Amino acid sequence: MTDAPRMPHLNRFFSVTLVLTVLSASLGAFMVEQRDPAVTDLAVEGAPGGIVFIADPHVREENLPLINETIREINEMHPSLVLIGGDFVFGGDDDLGLQSVWSELDAPTYAILGNHDYRSGDTATTLVKKLTQIRQARVSAADYDLGSLDDGTADVAYADRVSAALEANGVHVLRNQVVDLEIDGQPVRLVGFDDGWAGRASPPGLEPTDAFTIYLIHEPDCAAPWDADLILAGHTHGGQFLPAGVADRLGLSGRSACGDAVMYVTRGIGTSNLPREIRATPPEIVRIVSG
Image (cartoon, rainbow, N blue to C red; front, side, top):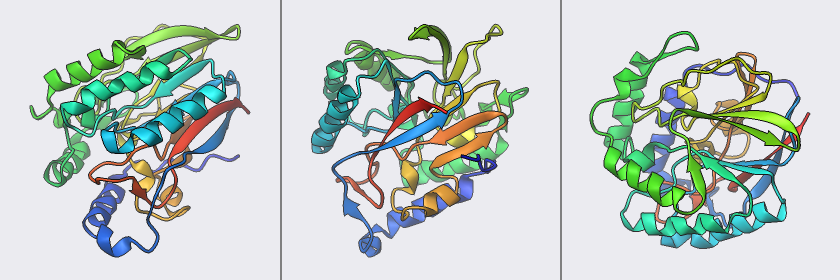
């Protein structure tokens, strides 16, 4: 599959999503309550088999059936590694206790945090603020600085509690950290960024490697053309209200190129700012296969 050029500025598309959120009542003609996740096979040259990626579970009482079904489907794939791209919570304190659901995953699991895990950019007002701040950020492999997003509003204490809840249930949380793994005899380097919109993302120092290298970052507009084989992101919910195909064309979901790396933005599992799982396209489990 040919990778389309990555669109460098997604701000206007996030703005479209915000408008659609406000107008969601009038968009019900193509929005339905989604229950069952769809599986997408992502072929990447040189990738080891057995890696599964999801993002944006937004675990809360209302979507526990969806989360449990997602975990059941993942376990049936018998993966070697599970990756989760942030936004574990909907934003409440009660969400923390529900993270015990991840203890049901059978495979080693690594994750990063998202903006909702920091309670950052999670309301209409702060969302607009973040879309403005990202324009001042420096997002390149050689000059990476998200200081413009570090406005003091991120709830670091809450994020630490989210991270602790995940670690207590078998999920290894990477916050600007790297881990070297081996999958079926193949070396794999995993680089996990702390959240960009919270102003916390900073590339860790890395030694050169021949390992297949995966970068995890929550927001795709905070990704840079790093020396990676694969960059995985979430955050956008595939536009959440956008019909199938439209989100891909806008760069809000699907496969693209980021420098020499394959980049994939998943539609995610849960939804934000809605009491139910209302979306135009189904939740997504990404299964990475060798291309």
